[in-house]
Length: 275
Ligand code: DGL
Image (cartoon, rainbow, N blue to C red):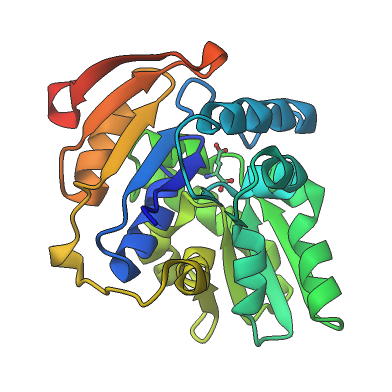
């Protein structure tokens, strides 16, 4: 069977998931959709997120993907049922993956305001691991800063410190990166966390879960990683998406502009260098 994995996020956050998947399954064809026309998702209403999820799944419906990875916690929190019901193919989500990675009893979750308000992490974790204490913190400033490439300046440092403070006060033993944009600020996060607090990236668990579906992993080291089998699509031209693709993937992939309405695929908008 020729497998192609569909993966989507509001923007560049899903790169962190794609990277983990390809580190384990190096030659896997993927179709990546960044909904740059509507990023950030984290401050939309739940019904907007659910409608967007429907549109995205409709778009994937004629793309011959064999499974879908929800590279976005906000969609996972609010529209998992829609994604699961839309196509008759396996769906892999981050919240489930993160829950399987836990062994601590006091857990903090950093997430978009919408994910945190939904309490999806709390509900899922406490249903699978009763007795676990979970505190969720919405972080409205982080995605806009990360999308604009501000990964290590005073503004983002202050924002992270502010968001970490209630979690540290609650003496959490582990922090889940409940937004796929956040792995990109892990170096900074580490400098602001007390020693001994484990950082959990759900994408690592998700990549492991894919083994059953994809068969034996073909692990690659970071410098062997290639994104040549991935097709990158966006819903609006975005210079920051292109810049981030180059910076994070270390390569300049071709990026295709697509329309989710009516399933039209429009023009190729060039390599990220060319935008
Ligand atoms: N990266 C996404 C998430 O994991 C969405 C972030 C956003 O667009 O606000 O929630």
